[in-house]
Structures are given as structure tokens and as C-alpha cells.
Image (cartoon, rainbow, N blue to C red; front, side):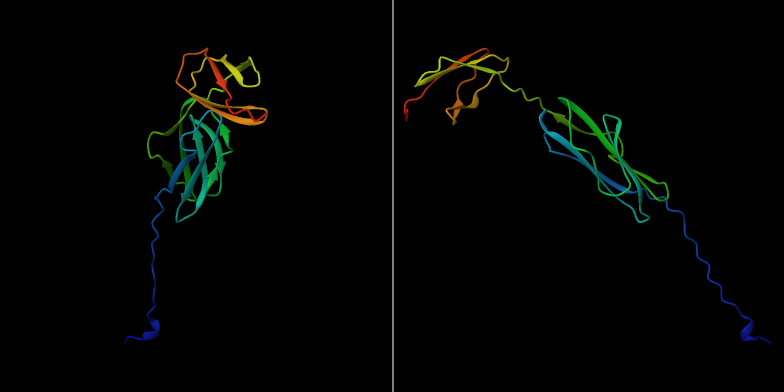
Length: 171
């Protein structure tokens, strides 16, 4: 009645669609940039199905697109103040991950003012330095005859004049 040769074996498998977004992490370096430093942003992304694209945005402007992780921006000097950034990553199934998930991350660029000075009244044992800028400095370094001289003094409102006397003149 039952013939074992008439029984077929069938295997049915179901692979649900991939709906999991990639994991993404974006960071900036240096941590506390100044106006004279270049900032680099790095986004790393991973996904079981693979990454098809990573995008990095600074101040809501697309600055870098990559097809491999990590994605690294060209080092750039930014203006003083607050800058926002985020990254998106797409996997091969068009799922999109974002860091941060909502909103933005940020870094603040601190302004560095390069002081301007006039050196006056230079003689064998004394130099006077006139601060011609608008910044207030308590320390600075300059050279006299190729020898570095460090100055540390009380803060003063610009313009200010500092007299430095050389007590041990080797000349």
C-alpha cells in the first residue's frame, strides 16, 4: 500500500527581510579645537548585510561620503563658535542608521588671538615690549639674540607695556 519511494521530502525556509539599521558612531578630533587647529570627523559603521554608504554632515552640510568604514573627513579649520555634526549609514538593504539617533553632536572652536607687539628701547640689559593688540596676556615668549625669554606677569588691560631687565648679561 505505502511505497516509500513515493514520499518526497520538502524543506521550506523563510528569510524575513532585513529591517535592522546599521550601527553608526561619529566623533571629532581634537576634542577641544582652537581656531588654529584642523578638525577631523570620523564615522564608523557596521551591519550584518554590509555597508553601502556613510555620510558625514557638519552644520547640516554634507562634507563627506564614503562606501567603506571608517569614513574620515578632510582635516578642516572651522570658524570660532559652535558647530554641529551627525552621520548617516546605509546598509545593502537600504536601512539607514544615524549617530546621534536624533539631533546632533557638537564641538566648539575656541578663538586664538595671535598677539601683536612692538619691541622698543632695546639695549644691553633691557627690552620694553608694547602690546599693540586688544588681547590681555599674562604669559608670552619671545627671543632676544636667539635666546628664548619667557614672561609671566599680572594681567593688564591692553595696550600695556612690559619692561624686562636682563640681570645676568653674558655678553
